[in-house]
Length: 384
Image 1 (cartoon, rainbow, N blue to C red):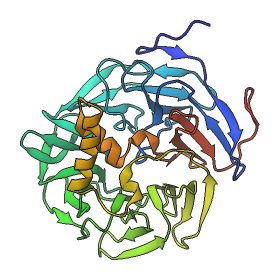
Image 2 (image 1 turned 60 degrees about the vertical axis):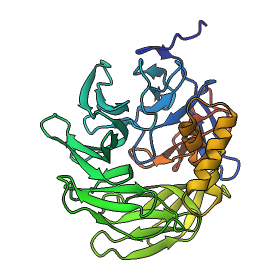
Image 3 (image 1 turned 180 degrees about the horizontal axis):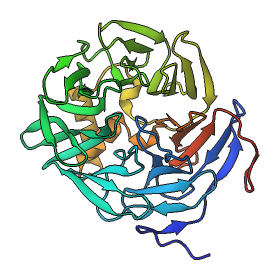
Image 4 (image 1 turned 180 degrees about the vertical axis):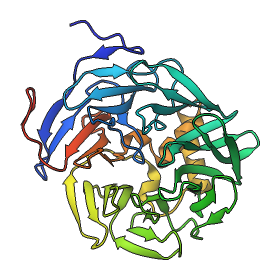
């Protein structure tokens, strides 16, 4: 068989293999098997297509970060974008099935059937990950412009757009699932959790803390207004959106977290030590292991219980300089907090019977799906 020439619209054969997790017996599907990096979309977004017939992922097999789909459970690989690299963790699937992603300082909409792309926003700066309101009408994205940091907010139809200033780095913006007039976002470093109305009013810090309280990966508790977040590496906690009261859900090294829609269960990965992907009951705090992650989970800061400070960045810069890096800032960030593609970043499927995650257990990061509930039967080509 001739090798696939990867470009926009190219299709390749299924790369799937299936095995049993050696610790829990759960069935796990490896959907990609390429010499380059492949990883799902960011854990705050669902990687499964609306009908669960495919999984959206970022891959480097054509040379730069581009979008692909892998048919599920045993479909072909299809390349969706090419050209300039996309932001590798920016893609999301809108309620109508369209795919939104960031390329440089712009947000683009991609029609998955025709692969037609249309520009939604040119920010005039740099954009991070973006998020949509529950009704699919509004977007918000972390933004850095020549005049400072903040949030780019607007409607997908282009009728409304704006910029909300913030005095330092912004990451992980998310709309309140109950009231889309509100956006929660993280300031980096401490204090971490903030909220603001999408018109720029009502800016508020939700919890005052210093760099020694290492809060990470806050998100809404499913379709509820409360937030859940990790105090690394000690506990999974909950914050009441209205009162600001904080309570502990469970004490363990929860890391990247994704609640189910009902807000009754939280999926997370773990590191140092890696005790696998965990499913946590929110009311009782009890948890069980779904499967091992096998990920290397790199980044020096995860060995500590505080945010990176000046000396951490200088140490990373010195290491990058020794390697004569042309982009020491990127290499330093990878050294301190990543590379992100070595982290599992688990998330639920649409029907919440499966979990998609990344792992470099084979030596190169690939896309995996673990079944929470046993499926009817094995398919041809499975390894059991």
